Image (cartoon, rainbow, N blue to C red; front, side, top):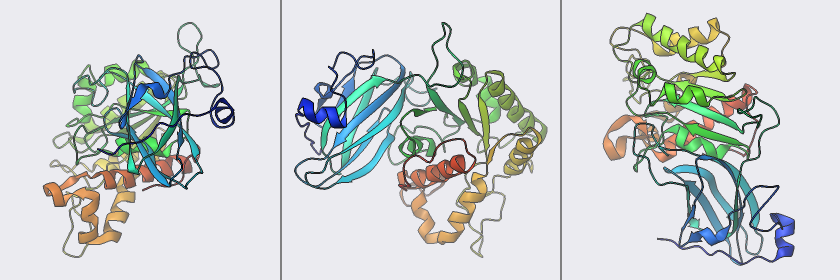
Length: 360
């Protein structure tokens, strides 16, 4: 394992780059710091919730540091720092149980972060409960909620527990500014039918939605025997359920399968998610979005264009073809690229601020 150093900082330095407040409180909130870190990991004994993390990266030598957390989520992309020129970065993270897929194991209580990268150097870290947002509805008792992006999806979206798999939702947090967290409730193997039926899924997600929260829905890969009327009705149920709670639904057409024709195109039912009953999932999703005035991310079109532009050989790196002969599930690289496409569309729709620069 790589090791990193947690450098001691003077109060004067903290006053300019982080907070000079004592570790016990920051704007009335408890602060946890580097005393919770050892080797290449940090563990913070906190309850489920939303937390702001501010880090100071770099040191006397040039460094490159990346931060992942919980179930392999990328929270901060690899960040280069020149010798003697540390930088401060912040992000917001959702801590929940189960910490990964909703039907999976609970995971480790609290917040766990892994400090990685080609030459990791963590100089300081501060973890605080997220400040409430200024806009949006409130919890019972009048306390505003932090803003979140909820993800409803399948294995191509979820927080995959094991390498080399990764869903695009697992890579989305690295593209977002502090104050906006991702609550990824995507789950492997789910269709629109099973997602609505399982109490651990939609019945768990919907009560957590508050006014102003975004809810991205990408379900299609497992609706292999769902007829068109049922598929349409299920998407409409999800949209109505989000709006009932004051959230903002966003429909996302599914990522393509890497299934080429002889001419190098993906114009076939397997690649474009047309099921065994002839139901064109992307087309139905587009139709529901238009009929109900729901923002649409046409990820099918975006990923089709990208995969075709790369061609049969270079596109293998986006998926797990080389490792698993898998043309459906994405690698960490592919999930990162596809998460960038989602972020770009959210920005173009005016649903999130531009945030960090592209990293994929």
